[in-house]
Amino acid sequence: MRRLDLLHAPRNKPSRFFRFLGPGLITGAADDDPSGIATYSQAGAAFGFGQLWSIALCLPLMIAVQECCARIGAVTGKGLVKVTSEIYSKKIVYSVVALVVVANVINIGADIAAIGAALNLFIPLPILLLSSISALLIVFLEIVIGYHTYAKFLKFLALTLLAYVLTAFIVGPNWLEVAKSLVVPEISWTTEYWYVIVALLGTTISPYMFFWQAAEEVEEQKFAIKNHRKVRTLKTIRRDTILGMSASQLASLFMIVTTAVVLNQNNVTNIQTAADAAKALEPLVQSFPDAGLYAKIIFAIGIIGMGLLGIPVLAGSVAYAVSDTRSWPQGLDYKFSQAKSFYAVIIIATAAGWGMNAIGIDPIRALVFAAVINGLVSIPLILLLGKISKNQNVMGVNVGGRLSRVMLTATFIVTLMAGLILMISLLRG
Image (cartoon, rainbow, N blue to C red; front, side, top):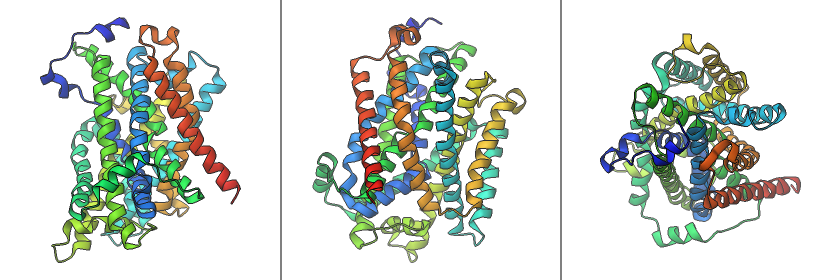
């Protein structure tokens, strides 16, 4: 397929637009994984509306990065690691893979622990045991049933995030103040403040999302060619990405608003357990005799559903990255017998994440810490994406335009500055 086909493929009719929604929407949904829910909740509880401005700032940056990743995958027909290996030395390639593996395994471990903590709200068994069962279930579903098959059903569980939207309207925040906080930064020069800011950046602009969306665009392209369908145009890919990222950030916005009103304004500024986080949803069911129980149920469904949706994305992006370095058959549409090495990496990555739980990590702290690690790891990866995007030998006529280059540079600067401020504040104690 010629690169020009992506630009000049026939336009899709409006009625067919939603049929082509895929990697962008799934990536956006997976972004609100348990790590994201915990980070946004902690931001609202600790600082009220004080960090809402990061949501408005991150949306265009997030769209720019994910559009770049999707374009690279669609144009080259290769994953990010494979493309990198064709341009740079093995040292750079292996460094990129190492960053992704470390960040994702930490994130997987935190998400598995969160699912165990959510289940523990109702099942009086050790969190480690519940986490272990969850990890085995996730691997089983991903390999035996196939991620793309069961992800179709998990998307409905993602609707539980609407609980934060409904709660926000029930508690009735000062929407003028909310709007003001979105555009006027309220800066605090404390280590705690910048720790959460970096976590917000990391859970929003996450490395695993880069590799996942690029790989999924490649799979979409292979599926279309195999089934004699039209390939996704760059215009369709951009629409898919914009909608997916916008939906993700809208959910994030209401998580912060809800926890700011329900928790922060009631002097609950530090979320230490899953039960603490679930309290944010109590106003939604306050007319019921046991509002706390129903709030826990809604919260648990959200955490478990988003965990089941997000953990395979984390493990899958590791498998795509490692497989690219070895030229292994890869893809979640393959059966286990067709891509044994690919699925072996998924199993190992999930098992390594589970291993973190065995050392007794604090689920809530681990979730925010995982987001911070993502924020720091994303810095060099964004720089790499910018260089690949403007490389004409790789992208041909589909190199990033001026707007894309400016936004990628802005994303790199923002994440770098936030990381440096955090490092300086930590060193100063």
